Image (tube, rainbow over all chains, first blue to last red; front, side):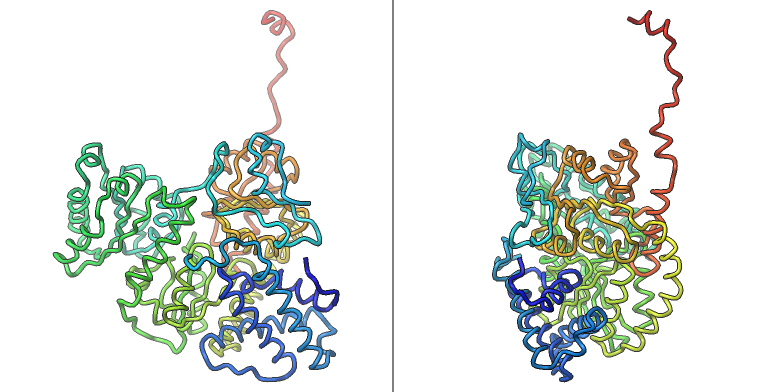
Length: 116
Length: 472
């Protein structure tokens, strides 16, 4: 169960549950990379910072982050009025909640198999 | 509500760990059904075998490749022609399948010579075909036939042919899922990197986990063509053997079916640095999102928006016509695994349909994480379900229609519940914008057809009283 009592984080979290396949890739290592990088880039986009997109992997994270942000703006009116420091905090909390669900406390028994 | 022990499972209580009823406030940290584990003795599984997962689902789709099944004849027949994946290669892959037709004496004395002769005969009979996959099966694996050695000999004698071996007998894993895995990893180990593709666009990708069911690939290919994106390889819908040998040259792997082909996408990422972008190709809203992500990857968003606008203008009114009529209908999905998470939210958002039960034959816990995250509270989630469980769940959730395979479909028809072929489709394709309208149409036709209700009405005259008395 989601741990935060912050209603805004809950809304963001529910959105990710409903839409985002990247949180549930096959293994802990790729879930972690996706969750950390996509939430980071989403935060950057929302605060008006241009994400540093250099590598092919960056391009993938950016594609996922960009359309998550577009959806979030459409669904949640409050997000446009949120100050940058609050966005950073919200995205960090969202990242922690997602890592807890999909990696740290995931009960998926295959998550840490080295072979797949 | 935790995991559920159904009444029919009281004699096999281990099944409780495979059945989950979602309630608000819970997630997969609390309860996650067991999946991808051996079927429990006492339950009549509807799973396929590992060989079938390799041949029927992935390898058998290739349009220019002889499928050589090294085993008894039934292994060939039962994985042939049961899935509708056409090709523009004269449907070679649908017309033909080869078997070494192993008999008792071959099992006793070994089948290597028979396999060699069969490979030679097949290539001689079809001189225009230069590619082949050889599959081992249960008996030929048990007797230890060395299919790699036979293939090596043939390839040394005939340099113009190329052969891939899949050593995945039916017993190799707990379900067909193992066959997906073996073929994926075998292919990336043995074949990827051997062919250099002709690059015709600045934008190149692999499209992974789409098998051209009733033309899915054709439909999506039109989108990629309009966007100017070169698909190096479809893995494996309407693909050639050599397309799939050149997957290492794509800039990105776009993945639809992560269950059957996530492995190769991950290996391409690890070995060649090709990122993996997972999308949903089923569903109006999801398809638009997938196109947007692909276009953002290549920096061609404007083209993507134009395509989405055109397709929306063309198909959305039709989709909405069905949505008005389907809103509030209840659906059960009993398929392999991934379609559960691809479909549950898309039918709800795009068509107003409520998914009330979902059963997966070969999904892993990863699939159940996705399914439960997207699925509704009050919905049942089952792994490796059997017929009695289906009956009991039907009583509980009373769906208007069930998306499943023809075998389970025939079963539910007897209960006068319509079914739609969730594997091979009724009248597909179902992917893309147009495809989701097709799905909606099939759903509407199934639930509006008065035939099943009429079939449930007993129109016989009551037996005359005298006749009944005489019978007593």
